[in-house]
Image 1: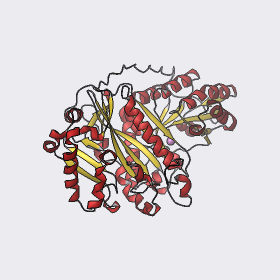
Image 2: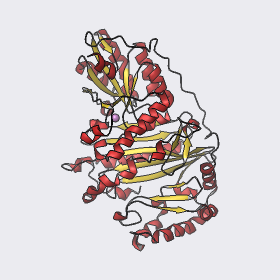
Image 3: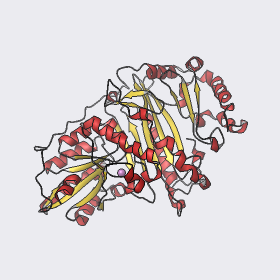
Image 4: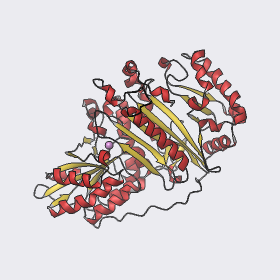
Length: 482
Ligand code: NI
């Protein structure tokens, strides 16, 4: 999204509840598993399918707050070999967070702090894979910033060219010599649209800023997506232009031609030239059967780990937990489950409980009932794909819940008693000390296994609280035996 689209225009906020529909919801097709690869093939916003098993060694970079007055959650994939593209996403996500938090001095945005008295500031950055095939990787980031103008929704497509070992912003799909013809064709199609005026189309004179979301459809057509207010008047909403395959093909760059081919006829592997080190396997707990701990007779603690699974942090955590025969509950985010089903399986095999923490960590109370259901059902389906079992608990991101959220699901809500604020301190000693000093019998403790510093705090927690006679159980076990 172009930087200036983030300037605050608060009077537009009233429209956000409606327009959030295209960002955080998902079409039924998104969650429909493909028949030939039920667990690892995922649809994206362009309607094409990507086989995630080809993404060897991928890790999801996630971060979030638990601050309900300024909720934010960001995630983007780090695919080995595509380091320059990862760096571009990291930079963009970092800038969006700075603007949201009001820490960007160049921006006029006051961020969360300037939202006092107004409902619902929120930043959410989520990802989907567009292509992961041969030497082509395409990722779309979707940003929802409820403090920004436009509709707060911005999308951007990032491309990586494994043959040239280069990150390619979307305009790189078009050959340099054909750029003018391509832009003219896009303009021509835009001019027929309602809400588009000659003045608004002049934005395209700066294609690098505005042509930031281009991707191919399954038929090889090129779809160009514009954030609200960038090429039309804001009430016209998000606008997209699709150039037919026959029209656009002669204008494609060498990379664009390969990206088109890998979208329409994907190869059976992705090779970006990076060596892949397989993740170490996680040992199952000696006794993953029924936990005999009776929390009405002994002191229990339910450690809960949110926002994962994450590689390699979750695997390290599982080893620590196994050393103390401790059980825990993992509140997983659906988009990470789809990327790392093997880790979720390892969690189950190690005797832990899996629970639902939404698909991409939005404030559920800002969504429509349909969107809330989609967030939870899509994640349930991903968990079932990975483990064969649906969860029974959910934790609303930020603990934000109302009657509509409760009515949208049969899952039982599970909040927490102790918040380690680990996302803020990133300090293992502080995280361990918070748990040790604050936790009381039968408390539920909130930690995030996406942060190495949080995982590093766990051995000290397990050692100290075990010595004090505590037993580490799952949330469902705690509830069942109290
Ligand atoms: Ni969370």
